[in-house]
Image 1: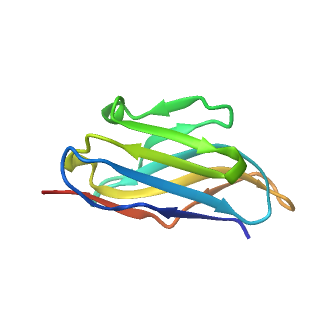
Image 2: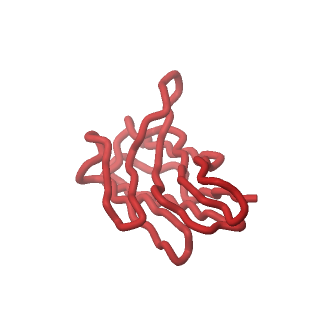
Image 3: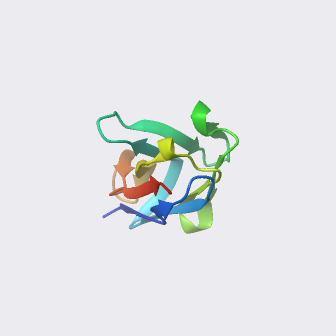
Length: 120
């Protein structure tokens, strides 16, 4: 059973920093793209950042220069460093990964979500 477990969310003041982590566990053969999405109340879930196994990154325009995505392939973990956060960054952040389990086909997996609230 493959699962993604996020951590690191919470309350942060505008201009502050927060680091999210997401670890994939289970019988994993390989992981391709890993990423972070977010969903604010009443809005659709949007891509924040994604990173390939080789390290190529893509960012939502509004977070470029403030957020940094990285991954540790040996630990099957992806990170999101959030700097200079703004109230509009408030949302539930979801980890996503394209995973090949040992005994199954490539599939898309989601974490349970972690709340990030930016407020003074």
